[in-house]
Image (cartoon, rainbow, N blue to C red; front, top):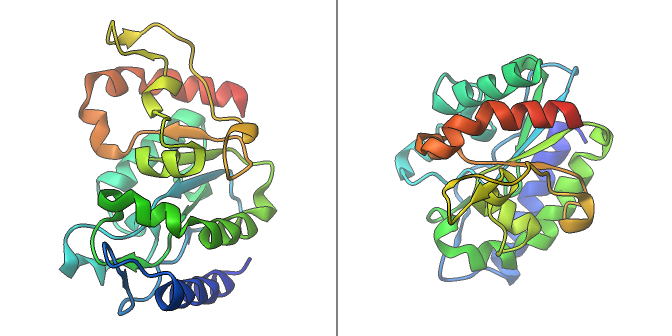
Length: 216
């Protein structure tokens, strides 16, 4: 799909949900434009899927133009660059998009039921958006989007080999197979950037990137 098609279909979805399925617990914000996918060149080698653009700081939302703010310098861009280096590709090879491209009134990870209620039409758009990238590896960024696609009982740490009892890596790395998720694509769940402060993720990032590179 062209970016203009993604943009206008996002507006249609947002308007339809607001009209028929808006939820007072966390209403859709109709004032701001949907956030566009981020990409630089046509040489795409990696798909990154985030959850939504609704950051906590209300005033900063209007400055978000592209997914994950990857058009700006910042911690997320640095994190994605580290991932790209670990996979042997360039930051310019990334295509990043959100499951939900419009804004809510407050960060919807606080009201996950709203996201699940609004998932179906947004998931249809996401699949159409990625149809031309069938053979490319996919990363999900953060626990909420992973649970939206794979189930509320899923944990990123489990796919990174973490043993809750020993608090160390006691199991093999895994990816989420297409049979196990609603995207119907194999993907690799990654923690969101702030979770890298946790020792386990920090120590095993290179290992999981090597695992992913082997599977790509």
